[in-house]
Amino acid sequence: MNISAPSDATADSGGPKNVEGTSDDSTAARIGAWGVLLGTAVTLVGLSWDIQWHNDVGPDTFFTLPHLFLYSGSAISGFASLAMVLITTAAQRAGRPVPRMGGTPIRVFGSNLTAPLGYMVAGAGAALFLLYGLLDMQWHSIYGFDAVLNTPSHVALFLSITLTMIGSIMVFAAHRDHRWGQFGIVLAIPILITFAPILAEALNNLEPPVDPTVLGIVLFGPMLLVLGAAVLARPGAAIAIAVALGGMQAILWWFSPWAAEAYASAIGLPLRDGLGSRPPSLPALMPMFLIVAAVAVEGLFWLARTRGYDANKIVLVAGLVTGVVVGLTFPLQLHLTHAMSSLEVNDVVTATLVGIPLGLLAGFLGGRFTRMLPVPAREAVR
Picture 1: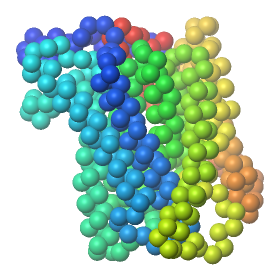
Picture 2 (picture 1 turned 60 degrees about the vertical axis):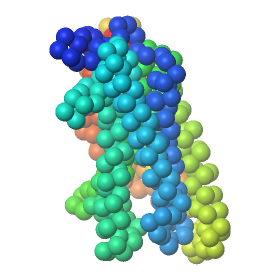
Picture 3 (picture 1 turned 90 degrees about the vertical axis):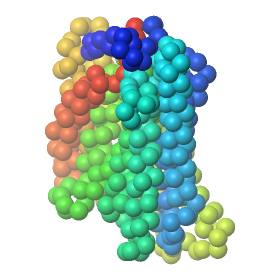
């Protein structure tokens, strides 16, 4: 997949001047990128904890500790993004070359600020989260507290969080000519793979014939795996992403039920009766067999690199294969993780058939989004 890097713009009309060459490798660039990623990780931990809290304990207020993790995560990403925007703006106003960090710098708010694209997206998501947090508080003050994910205020919050996570990927993509940028992508992609299917909960209001969460898992997992492998464009990238996802799954699998029980004990609340050996809710939905698809994706990308196969077709095939693998194995995953769940042939067939069109769509979108991500000055993604 040949994606030419954008040429450096010069400030012939007062616009920002970019440093020639590779992306910024300064301490500030690293702290900003890792700060945004840290915020998304804290948000993911808070969400997994909050879902587990609702399932295992129940009683809720607006300012529970899991909720504070959610708010803190967006705040961390938001302040990190704001700091990078101010650094870039200061350089532009002082007439210094604008550092190439976080994506192409663009003028916003009437050209009063110069914002790297990735940080603008991440910061906008964080700001919207605060706005919709007020909407959520108002919603609960009118209708009471609920334990469902598809209320308007919750969907708005999830969209905001997703925007920040997308911004995190964009930031690290702009620095993938450095090893730390590549490592950041390997971590940022699994975070969004875990979180993105939550957005599909909004479709529950339409009562679709297939569980919306399954649709989200079968679409977003393959799309982001293909995107990550294409952006990194190096052997082992897909496998590294799948391994990172498995590591996150293991951590959340242990942490979520432990945190819910420990917090309930600390504030004097009992656990629900009859919990049994149910697996933790969010980690149990993370695709366990993505590593199988990652091996297939590695093989397909190897063909593109060594045999000269059309990369546009390869990403479609990679999406199709990954969609089928995730669709085929997800019912098996539920059967393995839920002791009382039976493995029905109809469920396997349905999930596999759904994986075909969604996998093709995932491959198509993964290729398109790869072209849209920021690239370092001298890089071309092959």
